[in-house]
Image 1 (cartoon, rainbow, N blue to C red):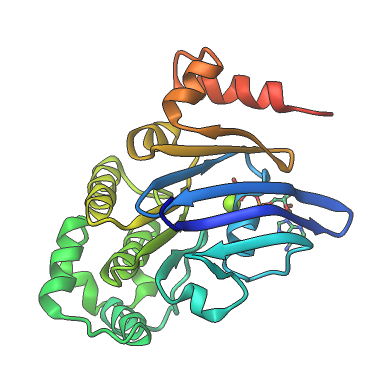
Image 2: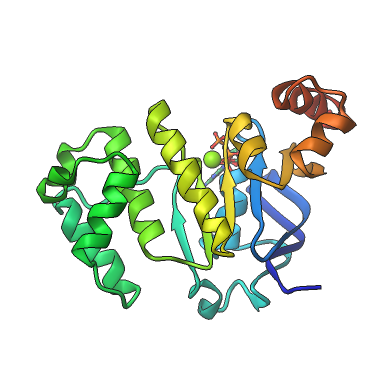
Length: 243
Ligand SMILES: Nc1ncnc2c1ncn2[C@@H]1O[C@H](COP(=O)(O)OP(=O)(O)OP(=O)(O)O)[C@@H](O)[C@H]1O
Ligand SMILES: [Mg+2]
Protein backbone atom coordinates (compact mmCIF):
# COMPACT_ATOMS: atom_id res chain seq x y z
CA UNK A 1 0.00 0.00 0.00
CA UNK A 2 1.19 3.54 -0.78
CA UNK A 3 2.51 5.51 2.18
CA UNK A 4 -0.26 7.29 4.05
CA UNK A 5 -0.18 11.08 4.31
CA UNK A 6 -1.61 11.07 7.83
CA UNK A 7 -1.94 8.23 10.28
CA UNK A 8 -3.37 8.27 13.81
CA UNK A 9 -2.98 5.18 15.93
CA UNK A 10 -4.95 5.03 19.19
CA UNK A 11 -4.45 8.74 19.91
CA UNK A 12 -5.72 10.01 23.24
CA UNK A 13 -5.93 13.60 24.44
CA UNK A 14 -7.55 15.06 27.53
CA UNK A 15 -7.89 18.58 28.84
CA UNK A 16 -7.88 18.13 32.62
CA UNK A 17 -10.63 15.63 33.41
CA UNK A 18 -12.20 15.98 29.96
CA UNK A 19 -11.24 13.18 27.57
CA UNK A 20 -11.53 14.83 24.14
CA UNK A 21 -9.92 12.12 21.99
CA UNK A 22 -10.32 8.57 23.24
CA UNK A 23 -8.26 6.23 21.08
CA UNK A 24 -8.51 7.71 17.59
CA UNK A 25 -7.48 5.54 14.62
CA UNK A 26 -7.48 7.33 11.29
CA UNK A 27 -5.54 6.96 8.06
CA UNK A 28 -5.58 9.31 5.08
CA UNK A 29 -3.99 7.97 1.89
CA UNK A 30 -1.58 10.18 -0.03
CA UNK A 31 -3.54 12.12 -2.65
CA UNK A 32 -6.91 11.64 -0.95
CA UNK A 33 -9.41 14.30 0.08
CA UNK A 34 -10.45 13.78 3.67
CA UNK A 35 -13.21 15.57 5.57
CA UNK A 36 -13.44 15.43 9.35
CA UNK A 37 -16.92 16.16 10.66
CA UNK A 38 -18.52 16.41 14.09
CA UNK A 39 -20.64 18.71 16.23
CA UNK A 40 -19.23 21.79 17.95
CA UNK A 41 -16.83 20.65 20.63
CA UNK A 42 -16.41 17.14 19.14
CA UNK A 43 -12.63 17.54 19.07
CA UNK A 44 -11.89 18.31 15.40
CA UNK A 45 -9.61 21.26 16.11
CA UNK A 46 -7.99 19.36 18.97
CA UNK A 47 -7.24 16.49 16.60
CA UNK A 48 -5.57 18.92 14.16
CA UNK A 49 -3.61 20.54 17.00
CA UNK A 50 -2.36 17.10 18.00
CA UNK A 51 -1.43 16.34 14.39
CA UNK A 52 0.60 19.53 14.12
CA UNK A 53 2.25 18.95 17.51
CA UNK A 54 0.73 22.16 18.88
CA UNK A 55 -0.23 20.20 21.96
CA UNK A 56 0.97 17.13 23.77
CA UNK A 57 -0.87 13.85 23.19
CA UNK A 58 -1.52 11.58 26.15
CA UNK A 59 -1.15 8.35 24.22
CA UNK A 60 -0.91 6.72 20.81
CA UNK A 61 1.10 7.83 17.82
CA UNK A 62 0.72 10.12 14.82
CA UNK A 63 2.67 10.08 11.58
CA UNK A 64 2.79 12.52 8.66
CA UNK A 65 4.14 10.94 5.47
CA UNK A 66 5.64 8.22 7.65
CA UNK A 67 7.50 10.62 9.96
CA UNK A 68 6.59 10.89 13.63
CA UNK A 69 4.56 14.09 14.13
CA UNK A 70 6.86 15.44 16.85
CA UNK A 71 9.74 15.52 14.36
CA UNK A 72 9.74 18.99 12.74
CA UNK A 73 10.59 17.38 9.36
CA UNK A 74 7.06 15.91 9.42
CA UNK A 75 5.69 19.42 8.85
CA UNK A 76 8.00 20.36 5.98
CA UNK A 77 5.51 19.41 3.27
CA UNK A 78 2.31 20.86 4.67
CA UNK A 79 0.38 24.11 4.89
CA UNK A 80 -2.19 24.85 7.57
CA UNK A 81 -5.04 27.31 7.87
CA UNK A 82 -6.35 27.60 11.44
CA UNK A 83 -10.00 27.88 12.39
CA UNK A 84 -9.49 31.46 13.56
CA UNK A 85 -7.01 32.88 11.11
CA UNK A 86 -5.61 36.21 12.30
CA UNK A 87 -2.73 37.57 10.23
CA UNK A 88 -0.65 40.33 11.86
CA UNK A 89 -2.99 43.33 11.56
CA UNK A 90 -0.29 45.81 10.55
CA UNK A 91 0.89 43.92 7.44
CA UNK A 92 -0.52 44.47 3.98
CA UNK A 93 -1.84 41.44 2.14
CA UNK A 94 1.24 41.51 -0.08
CA UNK A 95 3.62 41.68 2.90
CA UNK A 96 1.84 38.79 4.56
CA UNK A 97 2.03 36.56 1.49
CA UNK A 98 5.65 37.54 0.91
CA UNK A 99 6.52 36.70 4.49
CA UNK A 100 4.73 33.34 4.41
CA UNK A 101 6.26 32.32 1.11
CA UNK A 102 9.74 33.36 2.26
CA UNK A 103 9.35 31.05 5.26
CA UNK A 104 8.67 28.34 2.70
CA UNK A 105 11.74 29.39 0.72
CA UNK A 106 9.59 30.54 -2.17
CA UNK A 107 9.14 33.93 -3.75
CA UNK A 108 5.82 35.73 -4.03
CA UNK A 109 5.72 35.99 -7.81
CA UNK A 110 3.37 38.88 -8.66
CA UNK A 111 1.59 37.07 -11.49
CA UNK A 112 0.92 33.99 -9.37
CA UNK A 113 -0.32 36.11 -6.47
CA UNK A 114 -2.67 38.09 -8.71
CA UNK A 115 -3.93 34.91 -10.38
CA UNK A 116 -4.64 33.39 -6.96
CA UNK A 117 -6.48 36.52 -5.81
CA UNK A 118 -8.57 36.42 -8.99
CA UNK A 119 -9.28 32.70 -8.49
CA UNK A 120 -10.53 33.47 -4.98
CA UNK A 121 -12.57 36.47 -6.17
CA UNK A 122 -10.42 38.79 -4.07
CA UNK A 123 -9.75 42.26 -5.46
CA UNK A 124 -6.04 42.72 -6.23
CA UNK A 125 -6.31 46.26 -4.80
CA UNK A 126 -6.51 44.58 -1.36
CA UNK A 127 -2.89 43.46 -1.77
CA UNK A 128 -1.65 46.90 -0.78
CA UNK A 129 -4.08 47.44 2.07
CA UNK A 130 -3.38 46.51 5.69
CA UNK A 131 -5.13 43.32 6.71
CA UNK A 132 -6.89 45.14 9.56
CA UNK A 133 -9.06 46.75 6.86
CA UNK A 134 -10.12 43.35 5.46
CA UNK A 135 -13.57 41.89 6.03
CA UNK A 136 -13.82 38.42 7.63
CA UNK A 137 -14.23 36.72 4.26
CA UNK A 138 -11.33 38.69 2.73
CA UNK A 139 -9.09 37.64 5.62
CA UNK A 140 -10.09 34.02 5.15
CA UNK A 141 -9.32 34.26 1.43
CA UNK A 142 -5.89 35.71 2.20
CA UNK A 143 -5.14 32.73 4.45
CA UNK A 144 -6.32 30.32 1.77
CA UNK A 145 -4.21 32.14 -0.83
CA UNK A 146 -1.11 31.76 1.36
CA UNK A 147 -1.74 28.03 1.80
CA UNK A 148 -2.46 27.37 -1.87
CA UNK A 149 0.46 29.44 -3.15
CA UNK A 150 2.79 27.33 -1.00
CA UNK A 151 1.77 24.30 -3.12
CA UNK A 152 2.10 21.88 -0.20
CA UNK A 153 1.85 18.11 -0.51
CA UNK A 154 -0.59 18.16 2.40
CA UNK A 155 -3.10 20.95 2.98
CA UNK A 156 -4.74 21.06 6.42
CA UNK A 157 -7.69 23.42 6.65
CA UNK A 158 -9.82 23.91 9.77
CA UNK A 159 -13.22 25.07 8.50
CA UNK A 160 -11.92 26.63 5.28
CA UNK A 161 -15.35 27.83 4.11
CA UNK A 162 -15.97 29.84 7.26
CA UNK A 163 -17.15 33.35 6.38
CA UNK A 164 -17.09 32.79 2.63
CA UNK A 165 -19.94 33.86 0.35
CA UNK A 166 -21.45 31.31 -2.10
CA UNK A 167 -19.29 32.49 -5.01
CA UNK A 168 -16.11 32.22 -2.97
CA UNK A 169 -17.14 28.77 -1.72
CA UNK A 170 -17.59 27.57 -5.27
CA UNK A 171 -14.18 29.03 -6.18
CA UNK A 172 -12.46 27.38 -3.22
CA UNK A 173 -14.04 24.04 -4.05
CA UNK A 174 -12.70 24.36 -7.58
CA UNK A 175 -9.20 25.16 -6.27
CA UNK A 176 -9.35 22.18 -3.92
CA UNK A 177 -10.36 19.91 -6.81
CA UNK A 178 -7.38 21.18 -8.82
CA UNK A 179 -5.14 20.50 -5.86
CA UNK A 180 -6.32 16.90 -5.83
CA UNK A 181 -5.70 16.55 -9.54
CA UNK A 182 -2.09 17.50 -8.79
CA UNK A 183 -1.88 14.53 -6.42
CA UNK A 184 -1.84 16.61 -3.24
CA UNK A 185 -3.59 15.50 -0.06
CA UNK A 186 -6.42 17.46 1.50
CA UNK A 187 -7.36 17.22 5.19
CA UNK A 188 -10.12 19.53 6.31
CA UNK A 189 -12.90 20.00 8.82
CA UNK A 190 -16.29 21.36 7.91
CA UNK A 191 -19.81 21.87 9.15
CA UNK A 192 -20.91 22.20 5.53
CA UNK A 193 -21.67 18.52 4.95
CA UNK A 194 -22.53 19.07 1.29
CA UNK A 195 -18.97 20.31 0.75
CA UNK A 196 -17.60 17.12 2.30
CA UNK A 197 -19.92 15.05 0.11
CA UNK A 198 -18.81 16.95 -2.98
CA UNK A 199 -15.07 17.06 -2.37
CA UNK A 200 -14.09 14.07 -0.26
CA UNK A 201 -13.81 10.37 -0.88
CA UNK A 202 -13.11 9.74 2.78
CA UNK A 203 -14.80 11.13 5.87
CA UNK A 204 -14.70 10.50 9.58
CA UNK A 205 -17.45 11.41 12.03
CA UNK A 206 -15.98 12.27 15.41
CA UNK A 207 -18.37 12.07 18.33
CA UNK A 208 -17.89 12.01 22.07
CA UNK A 209 -14.20 11.42 21.68
CA UNK A 210 -14.47 8.50 19.29
CA UNK A 211 -14.64 7.78 15.59
CA UNK A 212 -18.28 6.83 15.05
CA UNK A 213 -18.01 6.47 11.27
CA UNK A 214 -15.10 6.08 8.87
CA UNK A 215 -15.60 5.66 5.12
CA UNK A 216 -16.88 7.44 2.05
CA UNK A 217 -19.69 10.04 2.25
CA UNK A 218 -21.77 7.66 0.12
CA UNK A 219 -21.18 4.82 2.61
CA UNK A 220 -22.21 7.13 5.46
CA UNK A 221 -25.52 7.77 3.73
CA UNK A 222 -25.98 4.07 2.90
CA UNK A 223 -25.02 2.76 6.35
CA UNK A 224 -27.37 5.14 8.14
CA UNK A 225 -30.09 5.14 5.48
CA UNK A 226 -29.82 8.91 5.24
CA UNK A 227 -31.68 10.92 2.59
CA UNK A 228 -28.84 13.42 2.74
CA UNK A 229 -25.44 13.78 4.40
CA UNK A 230 -27.08 15.81 7.15
CA UNK A 231 -29.70 13.15 7.82
CA UNK A 232 -27.06 10.39 7.83
CA UNK A 233 -24.76 12.43 10.07
CA UNK A 234 -27.54 13.04 12.60
CA UNK A 235 -28.44 9.33 12.67
CA UNK A 236 -24.77 8.43 12.99
CA UNK A 237 -24.11 10.62 16.01
CA UNK A 238 -27.35 9.42 17.61
CA UNK A 239 -26.24 5.81 17.19
CA UNK A 240 -22.73 6.68 18.38
CA UNK A 241 -23.85 8.45 21.55
CA UNK A 242 -22.70 6.54 24.60
CA UNK A 243 -23.97 8.50 27.58
N1 LIG B 1 -7.07 24.62 25.38
C1 LIG B 1 -8.13 23.99 25.87
N2 LIG B 1 -8.29 23.85 27.20
C2 LIG B 1 -9.34 23.18 27.71
N3 LIG B 1 -10.32 22.62 26.95
C3 LIG B 1 -10.22 22.74 25.65
C4 LIG B 1 -9.12 23.44 25.01
N4 LIG B 1 -9.29 23.38 23.67
C5 LIG B 1 -10.44 22.71 23.46
N5 LIG B 1 -11.00 22.32 24.63
C6 LIG B 1 -12.22 21.54 24.78
O1 LIG B 1 -12.11 20.37 23.99
C7 LIG B 1 -13.34 20.06 23.35
C8 LIG B 1 -13.11 19.95 21.86
O2 LIG B 1 -12.81 21.25 21.35
P1 LIG B 1 -12.44 21.49 19.83
O3 LIG B 1 -12.09 22.91 19.67
O4 LIG B 1 -11.44 20.48 19.43
O5 LIG B 1 -13.83 21.14 19.11
P2 LIG B 1 -14.26 21.28 17.58
O6 LIG B 1 -14.78 19.95 17.16
O7 LIG B 1 -13.14 21.85 16.79
O8 LIG B 1 -15.49 22.29 17.68
P3 LIG B 1 -15.99 23.45 16.66
O9 LIG B 1 -16.84 22.73 15.63
O10 LIG B 1 -16.82 24.33 17.52
O11 LIG B 1 -14.80 24.12 16.08
C9 LIG B 1 -14.32 21.15 23.77
O12 LIG B 1 -15.11 20.66 24.84
C10 LIG B 1 -13.44 22.27 24.24
O13 LIG B 1 -14.06 23.04 25.25
MG1 LIG C 1 -12.92 23.57 15.71
